[in-house]
Length: 151
Image: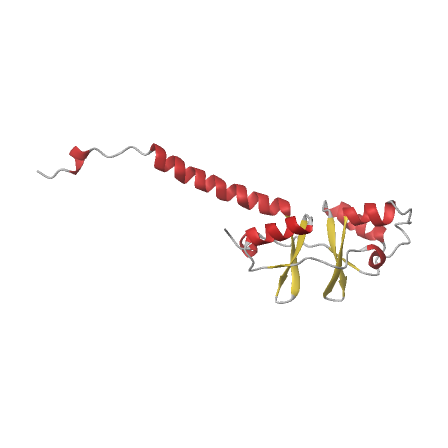
């Protein structure tokens, strides 16, 4: 299969600083129709804030999103992927960690956010190509032996 570099969505990374409020982070998610943001301290990734984090760590606890800093409720132990990693390994990693998004690093810097949807699209595309090859093989018209005779 392909590497993450081959399927990585360009510029699919939305960031907030760790001091931002949850409300600001959620606004970033809503404005960009995403379910997760990278939480940064300067240029360094220090965590992620997902929809799940907001529900479990903010709403369920009765915290005020406008007053709660992202750094207080973000996921700090982040599972990471490398841009040169095999997509199937990334999929396995995400499955084992029960996550839907994987921050992608290149040269130690976060460059994108891969979703399980991105991996599914790549798998389906590969399966489609494989099916077309199988169809071509199964339904090819065998050449007539008479056409190959040289008289």
